[in-house]
Figure (cartoon, one colour):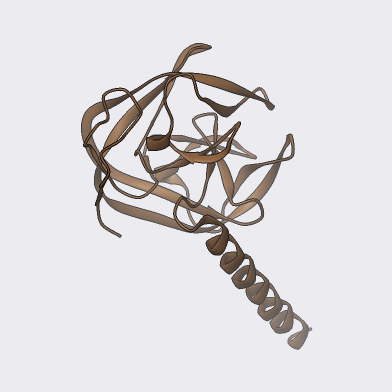
Length: 188
């Protein structure tokens, strides 16, 4: 997977110019919404359930894969509505009023869909700034909507080739379901 350098160096987020990013990930302490409450992403495993955002409601979805990447530079995203921030890599994509966009393509004043007390609302970004730290980063692949709630923000599983990868994962999930159903029927 490896690190990627932003080739155009045209990062709109304040203070992020020239920072390298590693795909689309979160530090291990990022809290993920699950049916059982908030759990750090580093403590979650494949097969566990998380909450996904689907047309205004939260729905449980299974983690199909957990990725762990090498240490990567992190940014802190703060919001105008409160003092609660979110730490992630520049490459991670979030639901915005313009569709899913990676942090490196967003600027102060743009908005991200956030979930608070099971209610969804767009919150304006106040700042995007490097934390000055690097640490191992994590991502989750989920079924269904291919999103999950990270530190209150609706995050997509994929940033690069999103539509193609969603279709490929949906086909793979369907084939696994058929295989499992066939095995179940064989042993009934």
